[in-house]
Each structure stands twice: as structure tokens, then as C-alpha cells.
Image (cartoon, rainbow, N blue to C red; front, side):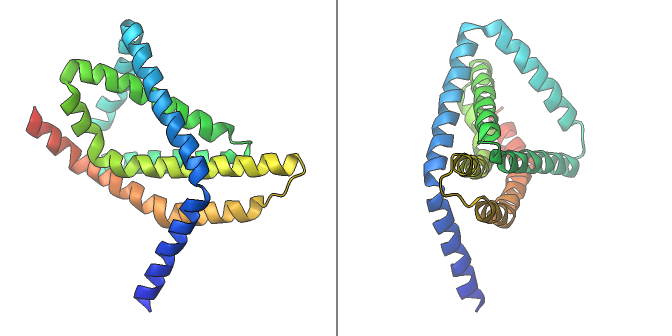
Length: 202
């Protein structure tokens, strides 16, 4: 019974992800484009990019001053709250998730370019990949759900067929069942594994 139930949940998850695949494609394309824009902007305006990095470093230094489990909790709560907001506020015609993913892609582009120039590409990959391989897909899915809700709202306003209530319910259910636990795993990796890997290459 448990095995059957687990398979059913996995099949449902696959079916749901397939239903938002178009929005996922848009989100990933926007994210990659924003990274490129951030990196190009940094290469053309290194002084301004460095100022942005200083602000980022100040925040990182504050987080590092916390005890390890507090760091993990901070990262988890921060990511969970922001992705949930992007999902829920997507109902406002998809503007918030669109802006959220564009901004974060841009910031990663700036951070990635400066870090790669200062410490090398291998360091950058080590700093981002271990937790990012879990965290980023969860961010993409959350914002894709928000984007779909926005599309449903547009359909409703323009008189086309829409089912906002059902889509919102499905999105929230998927979010709490799959995304929240995996964001917790990503936060744990970022707190306890990523720093260890970075120390090994320094």
C-alpha cells in the first residue's frame, strides 16, 4: 500500500510538472538570459559590479557569523518565503515571478562573473553546484507555478476559460509536498557540505 501510494504521488508529480512545462521553459530561458545580461554588464561596468558584490559580501559575512544550524534555518526560511511569495503573487498576471527570476538571474550573473575573475571558474562551480542542483529547480518550479497562475488570471479577465482556484490548490499542494522539503535539503547542503568542498580547493 505504501509503495503504491508513493508511486501514485510520483506519477502525480510528473503529471503536474508536465502541465507546467511550458512555463518552466519560459522561466529557465529568462533565468539564463538574465545571467548572461548580469555577466556582460559586470564585464562592461566592473566598478559598479564590485559595489554590488560588496553589498552581497556584507550580507554573507552576517550570515556566516551565525551558528551553523541558524545559518541553515536562515537560508531555508529565506528561500521558502521568497519562492512561496513568487508563487502566490503570480496571480497578479505573472509579473512578480517573472521579475523575481529575472532579478535573481541577473544577480547570479554579476556574482558569477566577479567570483570567476577573482577565484576561478572551478571555485564558482564548487560554491554553487552542490546545493544549486537542488535549489534552482525548486525556484524554477515555484516561479513557473506563479507564472501559470498569472496566465490563468489573464484568461479570466479576458473572458477565456480559466480555473484559478484549482490551479492555485494544485500549486500549493505541490509546493508544500515537494518543494519545501527539497529546499530544506538544499539549505543543509549549502550549510554543511558546500563550505567543506570550498575548503578542500582553497
